[in-house]
Image (cartoon, rainbow, N blue to C red; front, side):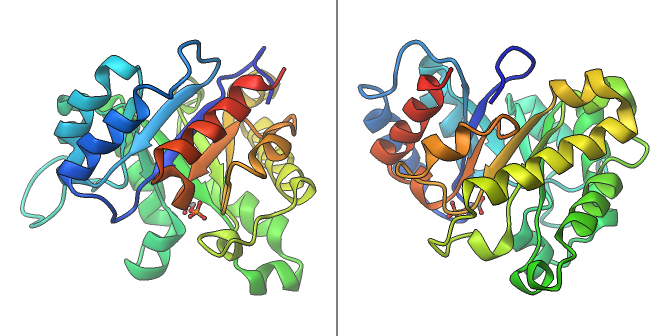
Length: 258
Ligand code: PGA
């Protein structure tokens, strides 16, 4: 982390978990244990149907609400889809874009990710753009090239004043939901390379202002070491964000540093 230049963001990604009632319960559990003074922004990204109740339940806790996806067209005949404006109008602040599960199961590509990033920014949302390599790609030694390509494609034609609103989440696919975390060195190496890619595209000032998160089996045990890396500015947390106490432990780890 480097709070002098950029925000630390701890974001939960609930994926397809929890009902509306569970969402309310989670907020109630969070309330007494959430630290009052927060040196990091706390975000909870929830399934679409839980957004209204999450906005209500988390408002007093100063926890921002994010969505897990959007569709890039502004409106029209796209049965089952949700637009950026619909999210913005509700009061959503963040939206996860290009999560590896969406790339793997729902056919998202670097091109659709780029379209979604534009749609999110156009609506005034902050995209959390996910990038990451598979185990095979890591073993082939192409991680750095692949991540640079994902970052460049996601940000294609994004203006410098807009790119500051983006968050990048480095999520090695082999570490997601597997309990196998990247070592702090591995996470640091890729997050530093992501910042270097942004520096090449937008210059040093923009690069140092962008929040880059690590995601993939982040938990209360490994959070402190991961967050101590200068280019790791937060976490995108799946499993451990479903339990209020574990989520708060990670928030506390982010609050402690520096
Ligand atoms: P995990 O998920 O923390 O359960 O590994 C992270 C993510 O997919 O965002």
